Image 1 (spheres, rainbow, N blue to C red):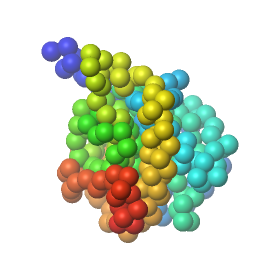
Image 2 (cartoon, rainbow, N blue to C red):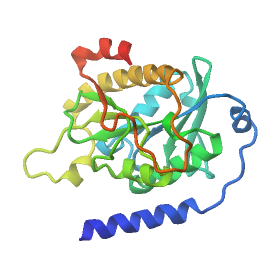
Image 3 (cartoon, rainbow, N blue to C red):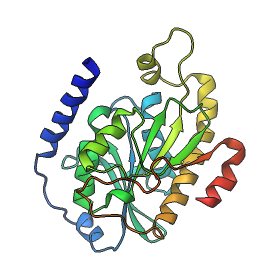
Image 4 (cartoon, one colour):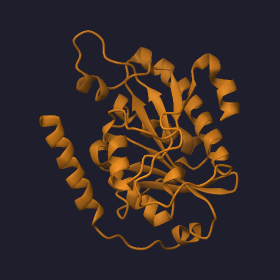
Length: 250
């Protein structure tokens, strides 16, 4: 009962925040609208809690920005309630977004950025933590349900579709008497950080491969309608041993 009420309240907050107007794109944001295909990569997480398991998506975005050589170009954008970088991957405009809203309402930032930069839902790649995967395991999920992840649920609600592909980064479930909340909001241990560096590198490989492949995918129905991914729970996984082959196949 409490969980249902909290979910309804969160949905109401999403709607209220989305109703706030933002200024039309100007400058480089305006130029991006002239391209035929635009992409948005989002690192889901909690502002001010970088370095925690729940915000590993933000760490992946940081690693992606570093790989692209644009790590010093993050700038706050109050119109999308987040930090953004506009860059290119193989001649395609790519917007990197780190929401500055709490995880449960990250979708507000994502929806505003999609509107400002003219990005279709199927071209939005969400990066987030996954309790059900062990640390060291990553996978691309081709749309579908949120699987209990509040940040993804917020994105589905605000964008009114579940077609967004996701990069799911395993953080493992807690052991012993540690609660799930304490686990996800806690920082990686020194032993886990040894694995994390490799995870970030492989995550960036998969993101770049996925971004390159999206140009050949056919578009789905227009944004705004409730849509369903063609492969509802399709998933492409990569573990350390499978990393190179998976990256080539994506």
